[in-house]
Image (tube, rainbow, N blue to C red; front, side):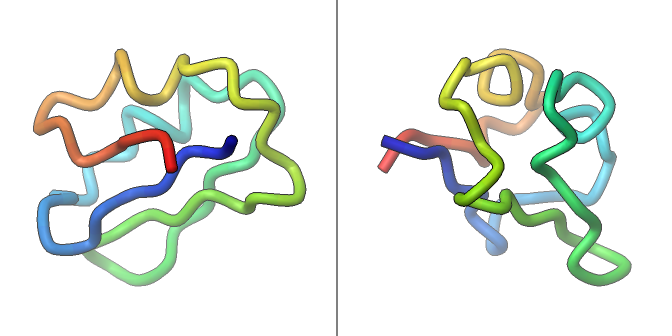
Length: 58
């Protein structure tokens, strides 16, 4: 299972992208980030880094 970022909760801080070991997170626009499911290895590093709990496993 991969992780997803809830755009309604994401504040665009980029903490998740900086902590992703496989660079699976990219800036979607000025306010939000998105996880590339084909690159994500489901390690959970992003979820534990997010300060607003916008990331969950789906």
